[in-house]
Image 1 (cartoon, rainbow, N blue to C red):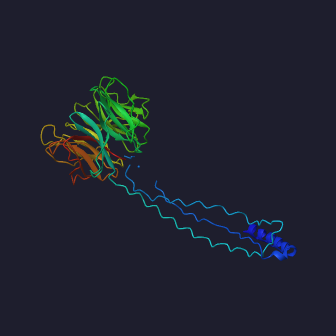
Image 2 (cartoon, one colour; image 1 turned 135 degrees about the horizontal axis):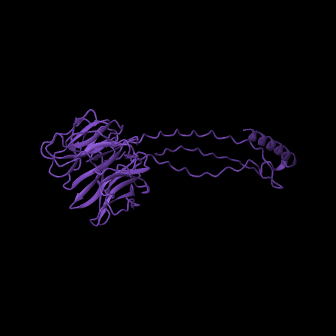
Image 3 (cartoon, rainbow, N blue to C red; image 1 turned 60 degrees about the horizontal axis):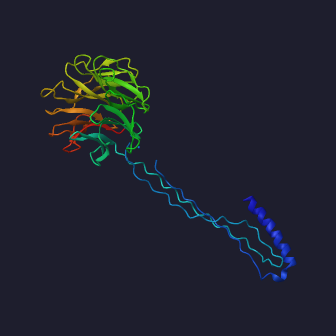
Amino acid sequence: MRWLAALLLVFSVTLATACVVEQEELDTAGETVTATRAAGQAATGTPIRTAVRGSTGTPQPTATAQPATASPSPLTPTLGPSAAISTLEPTATPAPTATPAATPTPAPTTSPYGRIIYTRSVQHDCEIWVMNGDGTGKTRFSGAPAACDEEPDWSPDGSRIAVSSMTGGGLSEVYVMNADGTGRTNLTSNPAGDSEPDWSPDGSRIAFSSNRDGYNQIFVMNADGTGQTNISNSPAGDWFPAWSPDGSKIAFFAQRDGNDEIYVMNPDGSGQTNLTSNPAGDFHPAWSPDGSKIAFASTRDNNGPGNAEIYVMNADGTGLTRLTDSPAEDWLPFWSPDGSKLSFSTDRDGGWEIYVMSADGSGQTNLTNDPAVNGELAWSR
């Protein structure tokens, strides 16, 4: 406030001089000087991979705009040639208005079960749908004209979705689109069949299966479609790649031992290891969010020819546990983002539905209840 004290001193000298010269007009003129202040108010704001594999956020309060206030003019009186100056008492400085304390931003409300993206098919018309992890909020996401979209997967940040798509009854290609369905782009553009896309945990690469080399193999490409490379290189058949949460491994199933087994390998294709080694068929590996377990479907304890159930094992193949026991088919397990739930596709109710259960196999519940065919799903991360 040093500038205000100096200004008042100069102002007092000016007043004294004016009073000696023009005392007779002391009661005829004057001037009032005012100052205004505006108190600001802090506003709160809101800050969802996907995934994940995203989540819904609770809308946050919107900051209320304050009316603009004109800046006060400097405390400099204007002295006309004949104006008399009355004795000005210093205008009291208004007490500062207390700034309201900022309202704490509520923590975003998110469902631990995230969202599920899945394929819904009616008479070969395949579309991508999205629902909440509890089965509510079913919404059609995409369905390109004359195309069949299948096998969706969220990007780790939830901003994009990869699908395999068949157009005009031809072979499938891997497409990527924004999370609102815009920007649909063909990444593979190959005359062979390309399918089963799976994003790397950092979102920079996509693994997929392709038969472009004469037999089905696991390929990896950059997220923009460049650098497509065969990493499994087996004369048998390899399908359904799944990146581990830390990006150090890719799980898949293969027929190289005369039946389908669960394998893991490094992202460059080295270190291919059979985890299941069972004469039955083992399919569709899915990593738990912490990378400690792998869920899969298997026909090893079937209740009839080809009957598949959902199992879980440690990431090294030990600790095998059966989670479902149904005379129907249970396929395509997938973990919830927090690891507490597993979803899967089953025909136990007559048609193909998406079920969810606790990670120990309890609480098996139908989420879709839909006469269409529902399957090929992925949780947001």
